[in-house]
Length: 368
Image 1 (tube, rainbow, N blue to C red):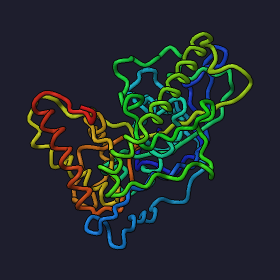
Image 2: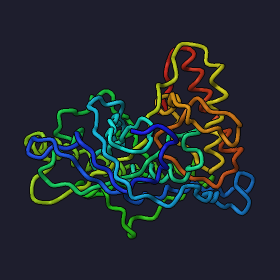
Image 3: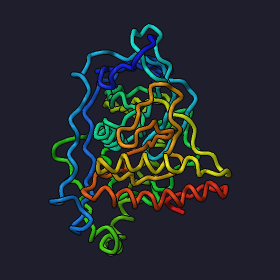
Image 4: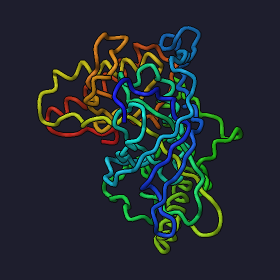
């Protein structure tokens, strides 16, 4: 792999990865194609004092990237899982040494079964914030998907050797699902990004608190029934795939697998030590995202990682220096028409709670 400036993030149209799937018990390389992302859902304020002039969402700045390339990225998945959550698992990648272009260290986020919609939405937010990739968020090299055969065994899907540790699963997945959980009802076709998908939920300032609370009470029985149906469906899937671990499912149908290729970042923030020196930088990266109207909606200790140890970090155009931290995980994010100052202050309050807890030696989670 060559030294020098990193290749543009839109240089790759396809991805060949080894170590991700097995067919009949034998590991085989998988070819995936770059695929369209799914626009994130808006968060709209009806209170004039809180919203941008005209109540409009911020416009995505024109891209500074060259025309999309047609390169193929050859990588191999390393077996050490770096993390996982509601949407999928993250693994380091080994890049083929024959590549004739420069790349940072990379990771791959593999969508869990029936979570390709969520990963497609996360990819859209990386695209929306192209100007601060390598500044406040990781560089993103694309969202890729492939159709796979029914006799494929996918790493980390139910029935594989790397089942989730029950006690570490994000509790929001089942016990406290997000409002935007619109996964396909068809468990075998998670990548159903069709024009006739349900309309996006529009949250307003008047319905984001008591209005939503009252609506949840009225619909609680319906939602609980739906959650139970999903749990029963999941249990049936896990039971069937564990009974035949050599295949993802029975029959001759196909299913979809999607991944997001990202720059590898560093560690989480330390616990039990003074953090005054890093607090301003963490607040600044959330301020950077707020300029694009992005509300993270998932501010957590695990989602703020150290910038990579590279001399190719970009100077922040808004603060005039290189940030030491990066934000990840945007599958729950919203693009809001709120004033930048309002988005900034909302993030600042929760950040202070998290940072104060870390200094005291404990981690504060959204569901605590």
